[in-house]
Length: 97
Figure 1 (tube, helix red, strand yellow):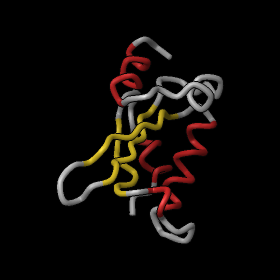
Figure 2 (tube, rainbow, N blue to C red; figure 1 turned 180 degrees about the vertical axis):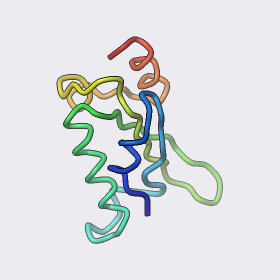
Figure 3 (tube, rainbow, N blue to C red; figure 1 turned 90 degrees about the vertical axis):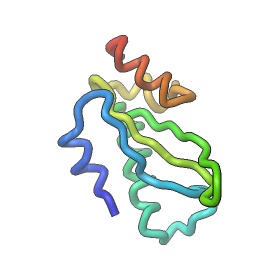
C-alpha cells in the first residue's frame, strides 16, 4: 500500500497518482486502502491536493481515485470547490491555483 504522505513530500505540483481503484464507497472502513482515502481527503481539506476520479472499463470496473498535488496550499479552493475532472485539476495548477 502506498503512503500518500511520503508521495506528497516527493511530488511536484501537477504530479498525480492513483490512491485507490475499485468502488471506494463500498469498501469496509477497516479495508487497508481506506486509510489512503482518508489521508487524501485530509490533504484536500488542507488545500494540498485535488481529488478526482475516472471510470474504469473492462473486467475491473469501478473507478480510479486520483490525487494531484496543488501548486500551493489553499484550503479555500480544493475541498470546497473541487475540479470535476483530472483535466480541470491540471488546468488549475497551470493557472497557478
